[in-house]
Image 1 (cartoon, rainbow, N blue to C red):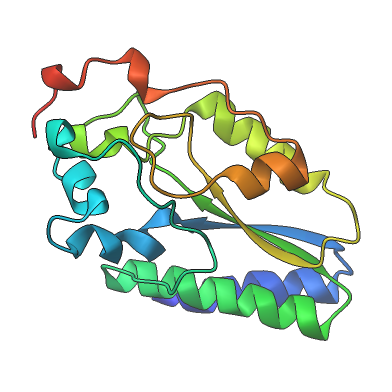
Image 2: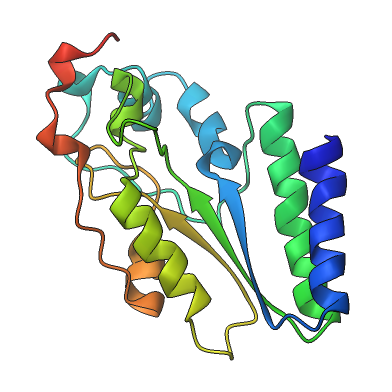
Length: 181
């Protein structure tokens, strides 16, 4: 919490005092992972890798849905999102929050569970660039960043529509049957 909470306040305060006009805050999709705990929901089936049981379509979780963190780290990231809102509302600062999907060192899913939230290095880089170069009028916004994965359940349409983000990668190119459940 010293880094996730106090460090975040310090970064925002330093940016504000230095007159920084845009901050891009890296949050995590883990702030919404509680939806995976709803037994037999599409989100639970996806996270459990029970792909054969998933319905053809399911509602995409948007950044407007209630946050459902699954760890103290995720709670700390929600604090960062609220801190971002505070600085956007109280200072002349634009803050864009990215709820990152799963970015791995190997640039591929590491477990079957990660197939839904996989975010490639190239899609991450493009998203950061789009957020940094977003119109100045954008005061505060949360965007989900996940590659074009078949079993994605967080909504990336706002980033595509508002920022022109075009993810080019997908976990679908990997064989999920080769991964542990």
